[in-house]
Length: 325
Image (cartoon, rainbow, N blue to C red; front, top):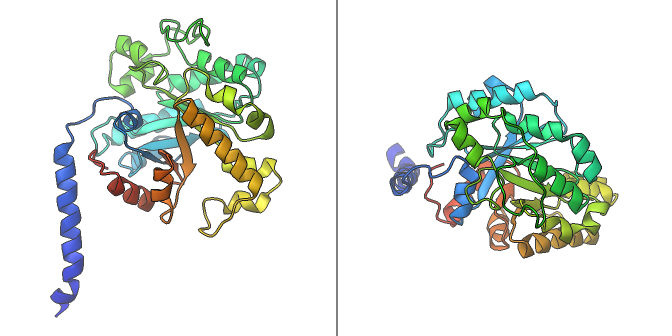
């Protein structure tokens, strides 16, 4: 009788195993260094969780369910040695179930996109972050197109020429930043220089650069920011947008309460950023929960925030993903 009661659970477990085995067999192995880019190029959404800490944190997280770590150096410590150790831990604990050396790691710096002058004066943060072997940057408080262009310029080597003279200036990353990064990526130094560039501006690039348009000055420049060459994705930064509009409670409730109703100005800000991102052919980042992930995917959101493994599970099955997770 006990076996009969357990039979539905056993059958469900067996079915999950069979589906996973079939999916794994259908996947031929990594085609790119950046797991997130590989998925997005194939039309599959990606799901992220949050990264902090050093070597042990990275090693423990290496087999994560997530495709991407959004590594916080905006609110957490600006410690590039710790970031390198996190990356080393990921590599030592890897590869991922999909066979990639590490999940994609995108860093949020305390360097905001307030103005071109601010970014130029602090470009060293971008240099140090990228030299730590990460796979992208998320620009917080992007306020104008000039600041975003300066950010992308600081993230590129001069050898890469896409959009130079037609929207961007020569890159300023220096030779010598490849030593640690190329080892973690598992490529030669020469190959690193060829691939460490902004995607999809450079189709062979492995770096994703995104923008958070999350305050009133940025919202006023939404369309021009989204059109800057070299961006991969955009988001409307729901919590900071809530703060900017004076809604403290909404900042804590958004993306957490299923019955949350956004104030009209928040909805307008979100719609504007999403519309501009789609017009610029950028990928769009937004939150999702178990009750709305399928609707969010249908609306075109393809970088899913929130850090919920169960949301990723629903979404991946819905879109028929074959890359193992």
